[in-house]
Amino acid sequence: MSFNLDKAKIELLILEKKLEILNIQEQAAPLKKSEEYQINFSNDGYEASEQILKLLNSDDKYIINYDKWYEVWDINSKYNIVIENYNDGEKAYRGLITTGSPTKIYSVKANEIIREWDKYDKSCIRKQYDYRGKNIKETLNIIDIILQSNINNKHTTFL
Image (cartoon, rainbow, N blue to C red; front, side):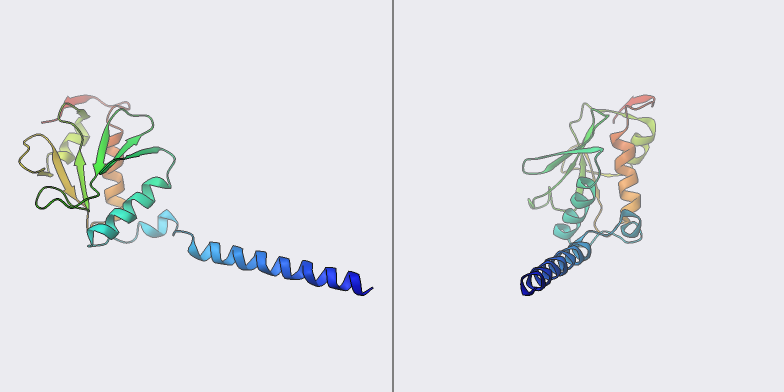
């Protein structure tokens, strides 16, 4: 009888530990996207980069390649954006989204958005968007519009 009691105590301890682990994992889990949409990205470039990458990595529709920066692709599109992940004086810094190579073709709707962005460095073709402190939902919507440029949209050459 003592053996069964000890076994029951051990099983109870194991269940308690499993419950503890589940509670810790639940607390450490990222916020649901709907909750995160209510806030803005951090004003700190490093934190903002971490936030946007966490969101993009949590969505299966994005492919992210890393070099000195992060290239983000929609799985159904041939277009990309760049999440800058390094500080290089005046040219690049964390908290920037930049357009890809200058020969890309974007939809009219994407072009309307990109034309409002600042020039990237001295480039007349590549553009940049500083998302630090900006609304998360709006920024993700912008990314979706640009990356989905070739999905059922008329195209125009990016100027």
